Length: 415
Image (cartoon, rainbow, N blue to C red; front, side, top):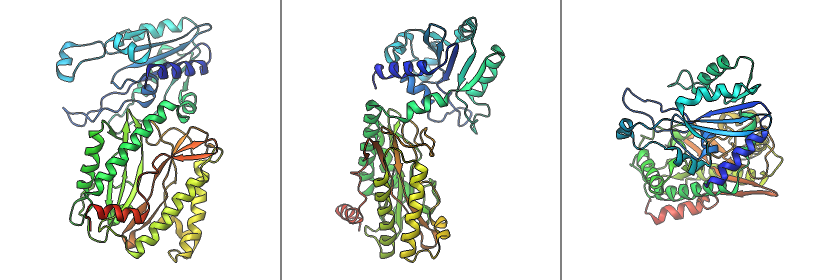
């Protein structure tokens, strides 16, 4: 992503803000996992969206006064002792080069800067409201809320999300390029994983193959990799990945690479022995046809909720025809999640599932069926770009036809 993208997006937000208002976004803290180690750093995606920087302890201030639009980036003051332990810290000129923000100051100057904006008759302040995390009982945004409420008791504090959600929902060409790259890495990683799907091996061996390829191509994991064999696949977010794969099982992989923090999210289901049984193939084809059917319905104007309703009606007919259910009500026993969610900087991105889709949005299409009594869980998930007249499947080249799957696995002597 180049500097022009961040400059353009910040100016777009500033023009949406009312006069005599400020907005403050933080980059997110490091969260400790134990007394002396930390979880991998996860930047606040909204901060990254406007800056292109993923570093803890930074703040981005927007301000709009009567005749002035402006922005200031606050960064931790470089500390040579700290740098010996955790690496070089950002310098102001480096931040300006990346973001295009000329006014870069240090964090210990933020209070004075905020107070100076109150002299202009500040009436509104924007923050992101966010739930507290298990490891962080009081979130950074909630701490800021308390602080700013005390500093500016007469100003109204509003949630920034309604202003930025429409911006993030529609993907620019630059964002789409990164999502496509993430999808290509995911394809390569899944294909490598197929070589490790064999009876007697462990789920984590498939996981390791997938994650190696993601890291080898400069990607990150978009979320915890799910590699679920047999009945494990009927648990939607199973990620222990420690069971042995057995002859006759199916293996469900829900996985995705992210590239420069933009995500892909793909699910495929493979036969551990290299070929589907008759029952597995019957259910697999119902899910595959559902995947293709819902993709055919993706277009501007329809919502994710409506797509899910279409899928449920499809399942009611198909499952009764196959003799897998005897009533409409039974469908919810075997399908119990939504068929689509938005995709972008967050794997579950920012749109409301009830809002109509628009040209430029990216969503998933992921029908599934889960029969614990048969030890069968099947989900087939693709990443889909909404276009003016329909959609483009960004993951169409990741194998999902059952016969092609069997041929692919046969090449690697899985049988």
